[in-house]
Amino acid sequence: MITLTVSLQVLPDHLEPFVEAIRTNAERSFTDEPGCLSFDVSQDLTDDHHFILNENYVDEKAVEEHRSTQHFKQWREAVAQHVVPGTQANTLANRLFHHHSPEADR
Amino acid sequence: MITLTVSLQVLPDHLEPFVEAIRTNAERSFTDEPGCLSFDVSQDLTDDHHFILNENYVDEKAVEEHRSTQHFKQWREAVAQHVVPGTQANTLANRLFHHHSPEADR
Image 1 (spheres, rainbow over the protein chains, first blue to last red):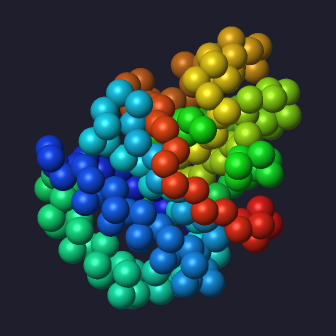
Image 2 (cartoon, rainbow over the protein chains, first blue to last red):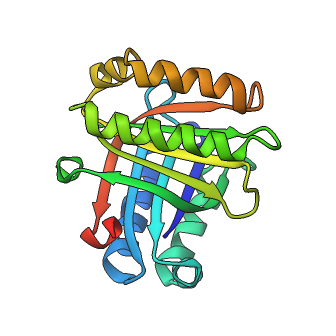
């Protein structure tokens, strides 16, 4: 399992369109891509313009497929419009340990 | 739901004891804490000394309880021994969107 973690900073006054764009990207990725097994979006408690994405893919090929979709292209356009340049940090990682309760899905 | 994301860099030659320490912390947190609903550990594909933790807690109180446990105290001692000083970055965030397939638990 491959975990993609993304950290980024949203431009002032761009919060609403950014949240709409990441909401759509998360939904489309999870629904349309068989290789995308989870997609979480969270907003920093101390800085509402700082977001973390946590995504899980079957393998690296599924990440490549994710990046070739139409919704990913639209997401990249939204990033160019709404994210502070240079603040996006992506980490692709191999998931070593996984613990998950059904209660986490509520 | 509160998501805690941790990024940290392990000292050279400390990989094995670090992995053992985070394996124990993840297991104990998930098993012993009713407020800890998920705990994932992943290792950067491009730097095997860079780790990302993704943890989900019911609320901020559950995070406080996590930090008051004996296994968290032991984890802090392991961090002091095995993690490059100044590299640990914690983000506490409010989970906005969540998509999760049972296949992500395999």
